[in-house]
Amino acid sequence: MTADFSAVGLRVGHATDAAGATGVTVIRGDGAFRAAAAILGRATGTRELDALSPHHLVDRVDAIVLTGGSAYGLGAADGVMRWMEERRRGFDVRVGVVPIVPAAVIFDLAPLGSPLARPTPAMAYDACERAAAVFEEGSVGAGTGATVGKGAGVERAMKGGVGAHVERAGALAVGAIAVVNALGDVRDGGGAIIAGARADGGGFADVARAMAQGAAAGPRPAAGNTTLAVVATNAALTRLELAQVARASGAALARRITPVGTSFDGDVIFAVGAVEGPAAPAIQVEALAVRALEMAIERGVRAAKGRDGVPGLAR
Image 1 (tube, helix red, strand yellow):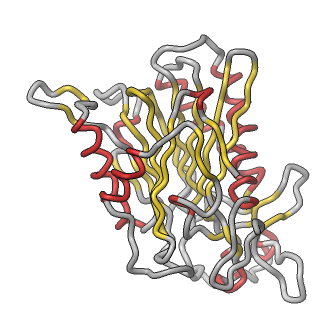
Image 2 (cartoon, rainbow, N blue to C red):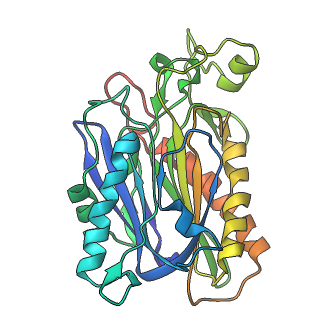
């Protein structure tokens, strides 16, 4: 499966460590863009998130990095900074430029691959170099080691991955990319679980129900979790409006992942807008962002291939 982000003016690049079951995904444009973020989870790993505040001096960013490797993976963003600096792209500090590259991580140190495998700056540099409007979905980049449904025990998990989708309304386009590595189950548009914790004898255990009944896997689930997302529009919105879009997009996670935003998830949503583009009401962008992100989450598991005894929906 592939996605096309040309309508929102962005390029996406992946670097994959298949043996280690980790990777990095870089989202960039042909120039800087406005961005904001909303934190939904309570176990986040992030870098340069303060630069996305509407009150911050820096009003644009140069790229966003989504990476595996837990907190170790944050260092991969150095590779994107190097790529940007070589092209003199970044915040002008008179003696040079400082690229602004916010990053967020998923925990993928288990159960797949090696817990010692981490995305590197060289991998992120390569992902930035090869970024394109049309890109692969599934078990690639930051989604390489992603799994879902770990709330009932990691041994019951299924494969997660990277998914993307674009919604359009006339000249307005809103796209979303998601790295789905959730504690909870992933549901389709009708509310049925399509990937998540497997029940004995077949079917799904329903993590949200199991947690409500006190039957989930202990006070600290065996493996970390997190869903990371970027919603992007070709509309020119202010940073404050983008912050509202990021927050509103959380409705997509609530509809498609159950439970979501838990104490063991590091869920973060970035919202990206053009510096120059068509005018659009922020409320319309919010509505399209929710629809796009819902589909991106679903595609993230439908495109994910199973490995190492962890089944996936893709063949």
